[in-house]
Image (cartoon, rainbow, N blue to C red):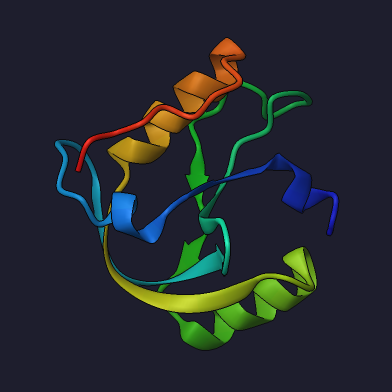
Length: 108
């Protein structure tokens, strides 16, 4: 796993596709971990600490694949995802920042 990958958290595809108020990201190619879900960059230390979570997607499949291979490496892939509700990522980032060890459970 790359050093960059250490600063990722993941949202399941099912949760990400569940409607919620806030930003809606459509028709993108996402960096995805097959067991963990869609990737968001969110460092808890270093110069970017405190920045909002950055969704790891691209509108170009070829660019997304090239970056995925170069930046994240083995264990990651790229997948077209028609819709992602980014508010779920903000909720997870808040949990990580607060230091809560357990994931927030959401009734779908």
